[in-house]
Amino acid sequence: MLVEEAFSSNWIAPAGPHLECFEREFCHYVEASHAVALSSGTGALHLALLLNGVEAGDEVLCSTLSFVASANPIRYVGAKPVFIDSDFGTWNMDPNLLADWLGRRAEKKRLPKAVIVVHLYGQCADLDPIQEVCDLYGIAVIEDAAEALGATYKNRYAGTSSSTGIFSFNGNKIITTSGGGMLVCKDAEWAEKARFLSTQARDSAPHYQHSQQGYNYRLSNVLAAIGRGQLAKLTEFIAARRSNFDYYFESLEDLAGIGFMPEPSYGKSTRWLSCITIEERESEVSSDKIRIALEAENIECRPVWKPLHLQPLFAHCEIIGGEVSEKLFRTGLCLPSGSALTEEQLSRVVAAIRSCF
Ligand SMILES: *Cc1c(COP(=O)(O)O)cnc(C)c1O
Image (tube, rainbow, N blue to C red; front, side, top):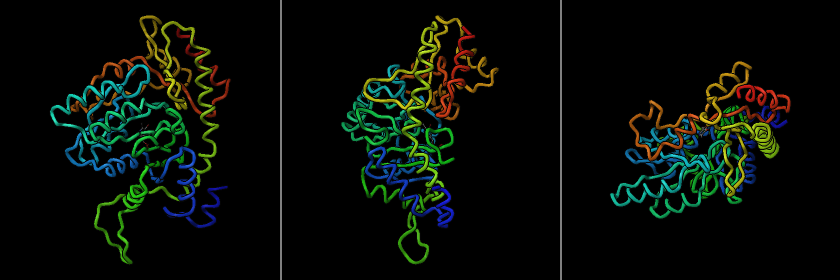
């Protein structure tokens, strides 16, 4: 086994052969130029902001419908988050809203430094128009692909279209090292710099010498061995997650007021999570009632992410739009979506939902 090999070869330190192999195999899977294995997706995003030159006082745009870790690193570098809404067709960043807002900001000569595009629940945002308008104004694009490893956009893998992309191997993600992350980039020097910053920024000298502030963000060789084993199963996990979604769709589609997270024709979602919406006026049952009914059956079910602009933590941040993500939060539910769910378990979930109608 890969982990036993990591122990028996005594490479337990945060360096070693599995780390390099994991990075190489990861690059191969997602067709990225360079990959740097890190201790978390959040740390990867922090380094991505540093690589892109984001500094204190800068503004950084971020998808509002996401997990808090998409925006926290903006504050780690002293920059200011500005949140932007989704569209109903993708649940991801609305490219038209972005273009309009950037146009207005360009007139005032107050442009943000970077845009963090989140690929939500296994599905890519509509990247090309986002990249195009950011290129027009010289704004860096960072892809938060923490939830979308293996998803595609026009035959490119999530995280690999822009200058930098990040992934997470946290416990709940599609592959896991218990905790971990990856940064991918197109530029070899940026990858070297990320490795340098993630290992305390040690200058090349026989003694310990430091001229820059660094971080302790490198993934360990043992966890990289786990990552390699997990990556080998990714294709299988994606198929299982997509088949969960298909099962829910076929068994619930007829219910009044039910909707499903759409899959735009530009790519393929991993369906990391299977998400539904409930239009209460049609269904006469609220998403909350369904969630509580599932809970009573000991079935875990969560509302869609609470938009970041509604979080007390970001109460004073600017929000562009907001109605779409607010509605998805009000009506959306994430159903059990594990790669190992059995048909019997899926049918229990379906029965519990149907009993509410
Ligand atoms: C999980 C997640 C992260 C953070 O990854 P960690 O490895 O937990 O630090 C960042 N962004 C999104 C959208 C996530 O879902």
